[in-house]
Length: 119
Image (cartoon, rainbow, N blue to C red):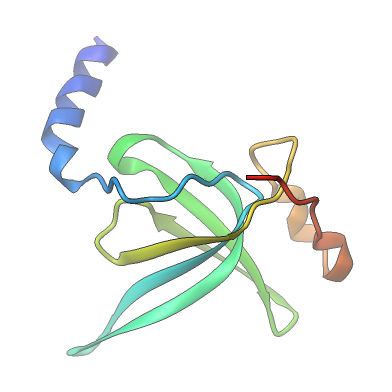
């Protein structure tokens, strides 16, 4: 039954799924260009950080990006196929041995470094 539901969801959501997203994994440093609407104005805000989690599938897929700004950790959960995500750039590919990097929340400075992955 779940295969049938998955197929129907795919057919309904196919026009909204973005196909131009680059290949990336958790641990990679990405730059997100997000459309922000404030009042009647629109602007683009850039959010740059490490992907600590990638979750879901299809139209519901989200990523959690973490950065340290002014000594305070900031996390943002972004739906990958949202119209507010204008562009996603992979700046650096890092090698990790797990998919969820929640242990990075307790680290600062040099402890945040990961080994590079050859792409």
